[in-house]
Amino acid sequence: MSADSSTTTSADRVIIIGGGFGGLATAVALHKVGVPSIVLEKSRHARSEGFSIGVFTNGWRALDELGVGDDLRSEFLRMERYELCEPSGHVLASFPFSDCPPPSHRPDHEMRVVMREAIPRVLTQKLPHGTIHFDAGAVDVTATSTGAEVTLEDGHKLHCRFVVLADGVHSKTAAKLHKVKLEYMHIVGWRAIVEMDSEEIEHPTARLAQGNGVRIGCIPVQYDAARKNALWYWFIACGARPDEDFGDMAQQKETMRQLVKGWTVGNLQQLLEATPLDQIKLSKIYQRQVESGKPWFDGCITGVGDACHATTPFLGQGGAMALESGVELAIFLKEAMRAAGGVPFADLPPEALCAALRKYETVRSERVAFVINKSRYIGSLSDKRNPLLRTVYQWLLKAGLVKFPIQPATFLDHTNWEPSGTLSTGPATSEQPAKDAQHAEE
Ligand SMILES: Cc1cc2nc3c(=O)[nH]c(=O)nc-3n(C[C@H](O)[C@H](O)[C@H](O)COP(=O)(O)OP(=O)(O)OC[C@H]3O[C@@H](n4cnc5c(N)ncnc54)[C@H](O)[C@@H]3O)c2cc1C
Image 1 (tube, rainbow, N blue to C red):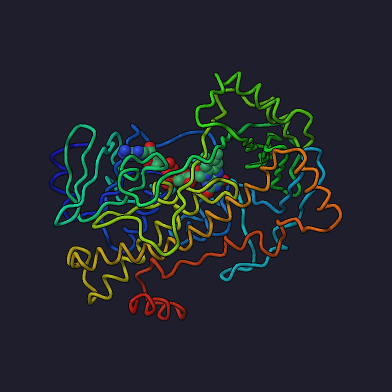
Image 2 (image 1 turned 60 degrees about the vertical axis):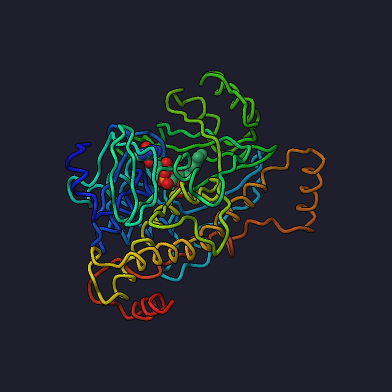
C-alpha cells in the first residue's frame, strides 16, 4: 500500500481491517449508502483456499441485500433435506427443509454450501477499484479526538473517521479492545472438500452425525453432470485440550480414521479416504460470548464478524453473522445521516457517528448472542463422552421420555432474519418507512 496516497485519502473515510466475509460485506454495504471505505487486508492477494462454508437462509438474505445472491446461487447445489444420525447410521432427525416454518420474508428456506473464495470474489466485484489494499496488515488501532488511527505493519499510521475491526477470530486489536474475551471451546474441527465420481444427486442432503463426543458432516457442494462428478464438503469435530498436538496431516488423518472407525454414515469413509492431505484444514474452535444489549467498543471503533462475535460452527452461522453485521452497520449509519437532516457522511457530526456505532453494537449483540447460545447448545448435544450418560440418554430418547431437541419447528428459527432497514437509497418500500422511523426515534 502506498503510504502517501493512503495518508491523504483516508482521513474522511472509514478503514476496515480485514478483507474476509465481514470486511468485504461491510465495504459493499457502506458503499451502497454512500460511505467511502478502504479495506486493509494483510494477505498478499485474494484468498483462494479450497474449502467451503454452509450458507443458510439468513446468509442468502444478507447476500441479496448486498446485491450478490444471484451471482452465487447458480453455482452451488441447494439442499433439500437435513439428516442427523448416530455413528451406526440410526437416524435421530430427518426432514426436508420445506418442513421448517418459512421465514417472514420468503416462502421457503435456502441452504447451500458455497466455495469459500466465491463470496469475497462476488463482493469485490461490487466495490470501486482501489478499495481493497492487500499486503496491508494492521497492528494497532487507537481512538483519537477526531476519529481513529490505524498503525500498519510497516509503522505507517492512517487516520480515519472510524475503524471497523473485521480481522477475524485472532484479531489482535479486538483482543485488546473488545469488552468480552475470546474463549477456546476445547474443540477442534477438520474440514475439507473433495471430488468424487458420482451419479446425479437426486435429493441433496446435508447429512450430519454425532456420537462419542465426535461430530461429522458430509454435504454435496456442486454436481457436474457432464463429468458425472460431485464436489463434497466434509468435516469432523472432536474435543481437544488447548495444547493438544495432532502431529502432521498424515498423523491427523489417522486420528480422524480412528475417531470415525466403524461409522456408517453416508459416504463419510469414502470421502475421508479420497481427500488429499493438503486439502484438509484443522481449526481450533473459539467463541466470544457477547452479552445481549451491551456494546463492544468505545469511540470511533466498531467491528463485524469473528473479531467481535465469533461463534462455534455447529449451526454454520459465523459467516452469515459476519455478512449480516456488515449490512446492519451500514443501515445504522444511513439512519444516522438521515436523522441528522440527510447530511452526507462527511458532515455527520462525530457524536452522531459514535452514537450510531454504539446503537449498532447494542442492537446487533441481541441477535448474535441468541445465535452464539443456540450454536453452543447444539454442539453440546454431541458432547456426551461419558458412556453411561450416553446410554441413559439414548434409552430416554427411545422410550419417548425425552424429545430429541432438533425438530423442524424450531431448527431454523435463528435463520429468520430481516435487515432492520434497507441499504437501498431509492424510494422506500411500503414496509420501510415504519422500520426507518423506528430507528430514527431510538
Ligand atoms: C470448522 C469451522 C467450520 C465453519 N463452518 C461455517 C459454516 O458452515 N457456515 C458459516 O457461515 N460459518 C462457518 N464457520 C465460521 C466462518 O468461517 C467465520 O465466521 C467467517 O469466516 C468470519 O468471517 P470474518 O470476515 O469475520 O473473518 P475471516 O473470514 O477470518 O476474515 C478475516 C480477514 O482479516 C484478515 N486479517 C487478519 N488479521 C489482519 C490484520 N492484522 N490486518 C489486516 N487484515 C487482517 C485475514 O487475512 C482475513 O482475510 C466455520 C468456522 C470453522 C472454524
